[in-house]
Image (cartoon, rainbow, N blue to C red):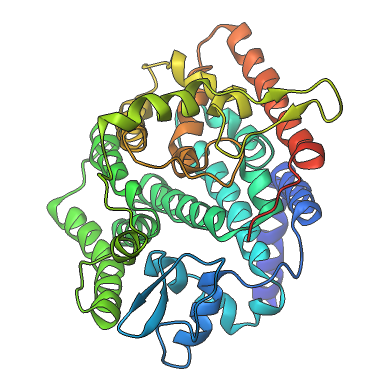
Length: 396
């Protein structure tokens, strides 16, 4: 009985300590619940997960709206295998009856909590941990992602969740194996995330009082191995080559034989990621968002903070090279990830971009701090308005 009483007291103490955070996340959960469509149907990873649970790594037939490839008489989905592996538990507990949009919103909600916890650990911006969670859900394209719940958006939500989990485990808990495991899951879902690996050694060098030992780094690398081995085993089982991505074969079958990365894509991608604006209309809803994409700071003006970084914040030196590398990779990529408003591929970088953007307002100047609050508010209004009035097109 005494142990139960002590446990109750600890729970009460934690609630008193984090009361405002609990209230905040209840509010954000309600918002996500309001915008998330229930019974939205099964996404391709969920369909494949059901087949895997009965021993088949392919779908029984070709489905027109799913990106698929045909290999040795079977129909496979073209997405990275890890996307499917991560929905197996959801399908096991009956998630197919709730639909794919629900788990997408769960990932977004979980990511907001992890971002809150991560920002709490970053000197110079930790006072804005609650604001970061608000900005992540209400001030970015994540609100549209929850409202839409398509497989294309779901992959980014998964990547965000496991990248944030990895960063939090490493920075806050120094849990090297768990950090490596989560990071590998993230980059096996969204390949470009592997460029974020530079964060770990640079952050440790600048911010840890005692540097990780060789044994610590060995545990980090050992954590990376299981997700890679599982993916390679699955690709060997299905495609006969452990290092052959389903995307590679799918592109060949779709006739997409051009260069994946090239300077010829730079001008177009730069325009979309940094300059593209929504179309202004004379009549309601007054804004029309082209599904090709718009500049990231048009949708989330607070991201302008990345242009005014405060390099006195040590974490900036670790986060910035990773963000630059990921942005550059997408600038030279053949595709920009349509079927969205905003820039869908930039969502992969939110876990790094948002702390960096906040660092841009971390100067002692009170005007800079107040400007962050104003820009987050404007970002929230833009995204709420877009979901309520301007984004009528839905995608499976």
